[in-house]
Amino acid sequence: RFVLWIGIQFAGLFVLASLAVYHRQVVLAAPAAQDESPHDRRLGMLFGLISGILTAQSFLLGKCAVELLKASVSAENQFRFLGSWLVYGLVGAYGVLTIVAQNEAMRFYDVTLVVPFSFSCFVVFSTINSLTFLQQWSVFTAVRYFILGVSLIAVITGVALVAMSARLEAAKEGRTATTQLLQSSRTPAV
Image (cartoon, rainbow, N blue to C red):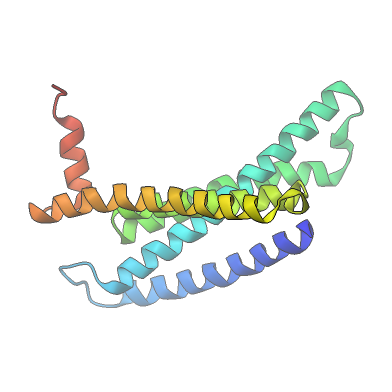
């Protein structure tokens, strides 16, 4: 199941990345507008989704890398196998790709919405990856599935509310939410 799930994620990431790169070229080729366009918003959120999925996968690969290192120190050297080196290479590649995707997301849309959205995607995909990798789906009862769903919805809703509050407050004053956060972080605490 895990290999199938990771294969689906790789295929999904390939499709999402292809769409993002194509859409990015279209947006950059269009004449610049004063206000943010819906295309910028979609592109920012698309890159945020890609970043969240990559972060969740790199988190899981990081767990595997630590286990490989522990097994090599305590028992037999695991780095005789090509797969071990592949895991470490993928951790590095995923780290770089995550930063690139998050940077592109913040380039096209407001930081106060893109980063929480990316974090929410990370939480959802990391939970699914861990349950699949550790083969824990069968342990859950219907009540636990319900509680898991409600807790994920609560995390995503909380993140969205925090992000939207900064954006709404900034909109009242005619600034971007990023400017609002920068200015509020510079004011001394009372």
